[in-house]
Length: 246
Image: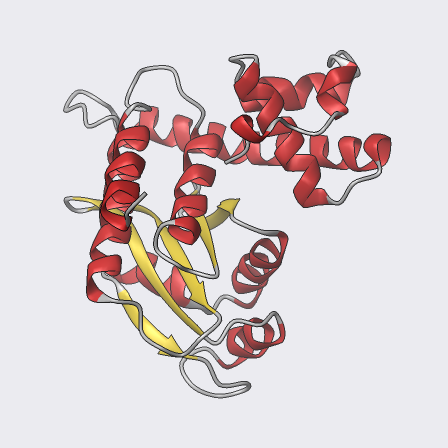
């Protein structure tokens, strides 16, 4: 499949989530995964604003990216935070340990094998609800065309979260974002359950939960809750079939 076909297919698949009933965490995880598989990023992560105005990590393409994003929030410096605060893209920055725009973030990113980073806001008109962070294992800038596609992915995800309804009240938006953040906590707990029972790493645990949810047409968060309370089908601990993997 050509790159252009990959991009079109990704946009179509993201667009199919524009319905009333969808899982925000699953949507944004798919966004992060596509930035890696289609655009060549080494890893990607997505943060959303919580009701108190701060950012929270909702999705990441790998455990290494999850750790880096959590550090960014702890250190309160990094590309996602800048893109969210300003509402404009943060152009790709070469990372240098202990110096530059984000000295502490850069040090941790380099240790994880990432050489550069850029971030795009999740923004619709004047409302910014989060940011998409892309990191590369090289210092070569991402092609402008790929940056445009990444922004298109981010825009489509933003529209799906806000549902682009003129009648949506601010409280309704805050409730949906709060639900997404709560879902992330539940999913992290469920990953720990699978980690213990199946003896796999956290990344594989998430893949199995997500694969089971997709193959059974269930919400990822509902599957995670079942894993935590012990009611989930034991088959969920088995490896996800290739067709169910992102």
